[in-house]
Image 1 (cartoon, each protein chain N blue to C red):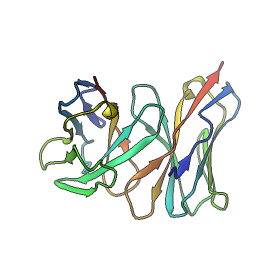
Image 2 (cartoon, each protein chain N blue to C red):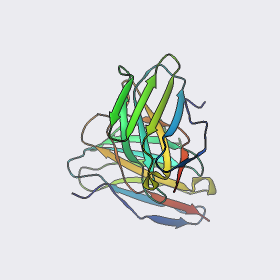
Image 3 (cartoon, rainbow over the protein chains, first blue to last red):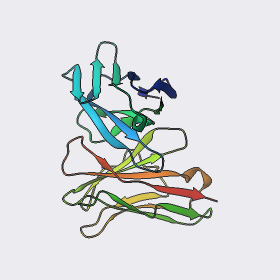
Length: 112
Length: 113
């Protein structure tokens, strides 16, 4: 069963505009929600996270929103830059466990 | 301060052979995690280890797969009698404590022919 879903396999955005990546989850027992960025042939790089007790966390151009009632997580990147082109994974951590459950990823392409 | 080091970067094995994947965590990190990524999929948790101990192996296949993190040296993920379905990217991550902040290595791409 897929506990974490990223329903858009790809997204194309114009440079300078906002990129919005979405993630849905099914389990209420997650305590941390994270976004990772991955370039080809490299490992995932941590971008930003949010605790289940918050609904927004901001770090520079990146903002993560958590809607617990809808079990929905989103990542906003503004303004989008060509270097943001990568695959983005959302991940969740189960309370009391150390493992992360990842979504399938969304390939973001920023067009000049 | 070197990051998480994985080697080899690429590994080709024939069906039935053994694959050994190595992971040296970041300096000061005593927690190691192994994940597998199949083509076009997200990363799937395999195992979580601390020095000399397996803490959670709930994601490890029951047969042919084993992991260790000895007192000295890197963590090893061992796959015996590899099959084509084992072809994947295997990522190791480390952390200094039980927090959620992992640092991932660049991965080992295993191809079984």
